[in-house]
Image 1 (cartoon, helix red, strand yellow):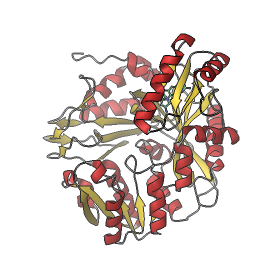
Image 2 (cartoon, rainbow, N blue to C red; image 1 turned 120 degrees about the horizontal axis):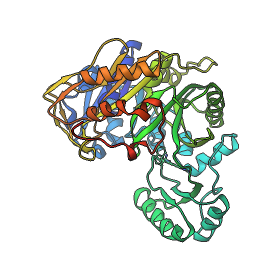
Image 3 (cartoon, rainbow, N blue to C red; image 1 turned 180 degrees about the vertical axis):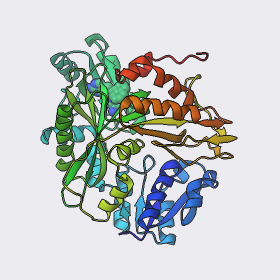
Image 4 (cartoon, rainbow, N blue to C red; image 1 turned 60 degrees about the vertical axis):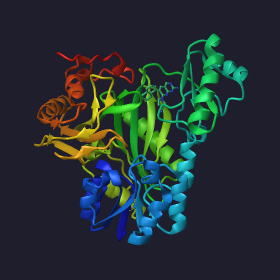
Length: 448
Ligand code: MV4
């Protein structure tokens, strides 16, 4: 087992990782920017190293500064958390060359899944269903239109270097194709320095259902069931839950099998997520793979009653996993609490938290790094807490979430708590009748 882990991250996830390390008897090193001096991850870690100024590129994203922190603290592993360098293949490679274990998959796996066309062709070979479309990169407009007519409009143009919704264009008819093609290429070039585009049939009103998987160093891969992440706004998830209200035992077997095949196809090591689009007929298609621990991992932890960070550290240390999949025995839901104004287009609202009371009680979990007196810096992600509730049924879980949201007090800054309170009352949400387009039709009124 590792002796000392350096956590190359900040906020709630850094704290989350420190907690598990403590329980496992592993020493921890926090790194922080000058903007995070008063952060809890700095206080709770055994050691803390300031790695630079507020700007991420000069601190949490600076590989030389992180490696210097490894050097002076003698850490033998790095946990990247999510975001920042978590899916940076070059960083994983540098860690390996330096002799420090990157807690996650190797550079080759990260690269394969980071390039969306390579990921898709890998999945086709593994027998995982994918959305019909081009075999690889589109050569030109002519080829694009030909394929679009073949698979029928509407189609979607995606950047091979993209992901998470960046550089996507929907084309509804032939006359719009060239314009959208040019826009997609320009956007992709500007955002990723790579204008490679591929085409797919556009799946209308899909659900986003993802499977948690874990693989060890001996070729074993299992799944830990699904999370429904369809409640999103501009590709930012707001609520996640497990099991999906849309799931049946039969579909879970099929999708779970596909997720395990996906992991085995690349000999996956670590925790990962296979994202699927699911249409209203319950057809499912591989969308992307995330090669990191995700924000919403607690939802899975609560329904299968396992610490995913602990499992992640164990497989990184070479401990094998058992051969069986895990199934939800409860219902869990997570609301992301962001320092944003939900009545003002979710505008970021950093600043000083003057009072803070987090909900408690049976089946209520709050993962957060903030406290009364803490100032939310404007430089990073606006998420300040995750409120996770679990109960026997979805209905009970929603009631618990409503009770917990009512108990949540955050003063000094605006948060997304009022949004979640309204969402929990929505009839369609309560029925489990929603897809990725839900938030566009959901109206938040100020005086209700
Ligand atoms: C799609 C799609 C419909 N059809 N692909 C958005 C994020 C990126 N990972 C892929 N995305 C989509 N790909 C086809 N062929 C619709 C989306 C999509 C979406 C997916 C999941 C969650 C929210 C979404 C919001 C808009 C579009």
